[in-house]
Image 1: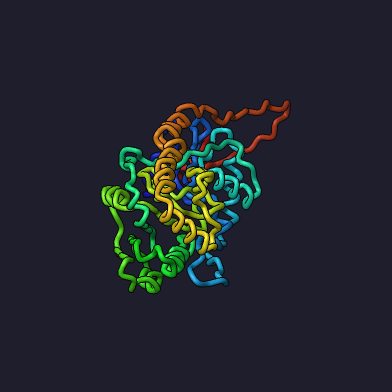
Image 2: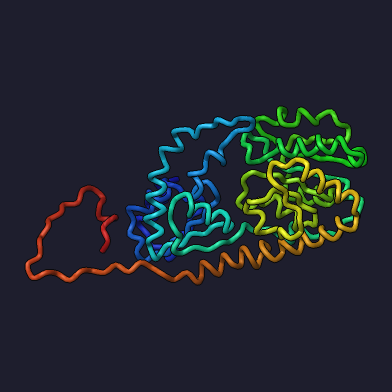
Length: 348
């Protein structure tokens, strides 16, 4: 709880404090403390640094006139204030999961991060080991998503891609498995629920079940309107599934764009054409499968995530130096009477 954290920070000194998903509540915990000899690393997970594009992040499906709720917009100025203030402290470092997210944050807040790193979320090469794909798995496509009412998950695009494929000859020889749950699940899958080769599983999967599902499928369809990294996409690529996703998001930093599996976000025909091409070209499918794995091994496996994170924590040595000004010959004397418990907040 916040009270326990506040008490710890008042009573003890720490070499380093790592904050994941920084927001005003955490800044307000740090603010009263003497942290001049403490290194602070702030890890962004999306909205905490991209709140000023919440009109995109929080937009529901099937609406063009979404208004960001006042409970969110009322926090913009205080969030700006804290991020700008801590950005100017030499003992603070910001960590983002992609350059895409960092640069967008800089653009919308109007700053340049003085001390920052880009470290992706870890994709476990042991949990999701590469297995050479049988060419027949090119016929099996899966979708793994939340079905909450947020159009950034872009399930409506995935559904329209399946509908487009249903008009083509290859469709009757393919299978589609859809996993996930959320508050508009039935509404989203309604247009495709009667196809006999579309299997809908209204549930979430454990890591072990995801690994098994990867082994049973060849193509992962992950259309998206907003992803800072897209962990599920990278996990599928690590396993050797061919991931088909959208351009101009953070995922493009971790799965090689040169492989040609990123589509214009709203171009339904482009996704369908690519899936049909993989169906018609088994060798291309197998080649891409291996290259998918190799790509994420070079971007978000252990050496590029957890190992890099640990090295960042160990190497970060800058701390704020507080300079005591020299006294004037005739200094102005102020007498300050602190109130209850203020002694814990006064720098010695």
